[in-house]
Length: 234
Image (cartoon, rainbow, N blue to C red; front, side):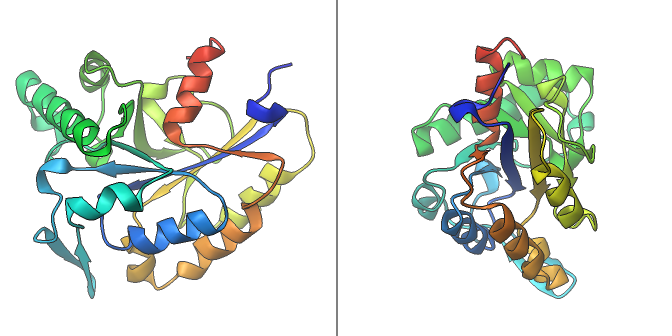
């Protein structure tokens, strides 16, 4: 019977976008509980000068030089060079947004970049082909399933839930319930949303409940897809 690495039947992964300063607190939380995340970056606009206001919270992208140390032990992934709406791009513009971001991230982080998250959740067959043409193995959407199945199509990967889902802790209980079936819990979001909604306690409670357990494989998005490929599932 198929198992995750270590003979485990449970896997947990996270995906967070935009390389903003609140990631510092989130990464610290992940590291405290032995969790792993994927952080999706726009290398063409990755600097503290790129800010915006969400309600009363100033959201600021971090300077590139702090990121390799911050994200050490985690995964970085493509989020396109400048975060455009992908539907409006020509094929050439789309290819460049993907290619340039991937090249920049690989040079900066000294790791092979294998996936991405779609800006604004924009994806269709044309966009997925372009992603695949760049050698990327997966693309995270903004759609969610409320379930724990492995993705049938990693280039249209739907998470279990956004961290603001009111069912988050209920899903955690379902995820941990006894059973020999493989379950993948995938949470996505933007870390600035915890400041905007003033609710860091929801992710703190979640991480405390699911962190540092012997029965869960803590993996990045890329590690999961590579495991799937090794086992003929992708």
